[in-house]
Amino acid sequence: MPTPTVSIVIPIYNEEESLPPLVESLLSALTPQTFSYEIIFVNDGSRDGSLSLLEQYAAQHRFIKVIDFRRNFGQTAAMTAGFMQASGEIIIPMDGDNQNDPTDIPRLLEKMEEGFDVVSGWRKNRQDRGLTRVLPSKIANSLISIVSGVHLHDYGCTLKAYRHDVLEGVRLYGEMHRFIPIYASWQGGKVSEIVVNHHPRRFGVSKYNLSRTFRVILDLLLIKFMGSYSSSPIHFFGGFGLFSFGLSGLFTLVALWYKFYGNKSFIQTPLPLIVVLLALVGVLSIFIGFLAEILMRTYYESQGKSVYIIRKKINFESDK
Image (cartoon, rainbow, N blue to C red):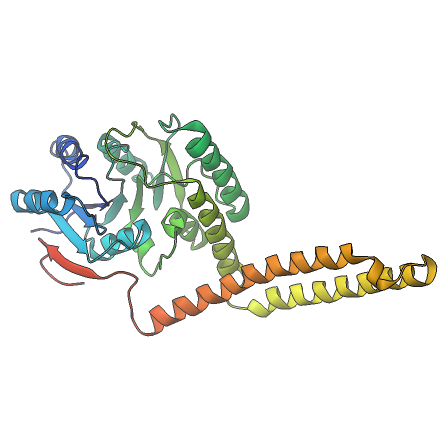
């Protein structure tokens, strides 16, 4: 098969009911197009009949390719596997629950022709629950934009378009697939966004919950740390150490003032100690998370290990 222009990567986890309408809508949207394409489904350890359906579609269409994980490794790992196996000049990930609209794919490509390296989808009229999905997403998007300096309305929208070279060398962990536009921008890439369609989920149960928002915030803190201080971590940890010593000296002076001028014994003022102790425990916990993440990356990357295990691949001509 000739090298495709576009690679569409779709993680699948227990989407047996969603797959038939998804494949139908993909074929309907892509068949009239003039560009060549491949569709890479990554079965992320589904326990229903998703794999069986994917095998049937792959047998019918050579441009439909399947990566099957041994177990569930998560959306970011599934996307990473799809990106690593993709052959197209442009890679477009999308969800497998039919909430993304394949008819937006040509519009993403048209925007990229203006010279952008990343074009992100913006679900302006999002069809999800307002309190548990939309509101936390808006808060997270605003926070990510402020911290990263890359202003997008919808980081959580899976439907995006990337030039292949933007993804080379990008290592994804945790929930970090949504931060690829930040990596691209930090490396000098041009990032834009367009409004895309968003449909309500018709089948299955959403895999997202409120706890995922907190994981995204922690990942955001991590990429900020890695982006600003990974080459000189002493500037960060040393700076905090000096700040801690300054606070320690300040509280020492306050404690002495209370003892000699306020007639208060050290043991009569436990609140400052409790506040400082709790603050340090919280900060140290985050630091331990940073160090654990760095050690984990060193473990995987120094030994050439992967964060996922593939059981088999279908319709791929060569191994990557």
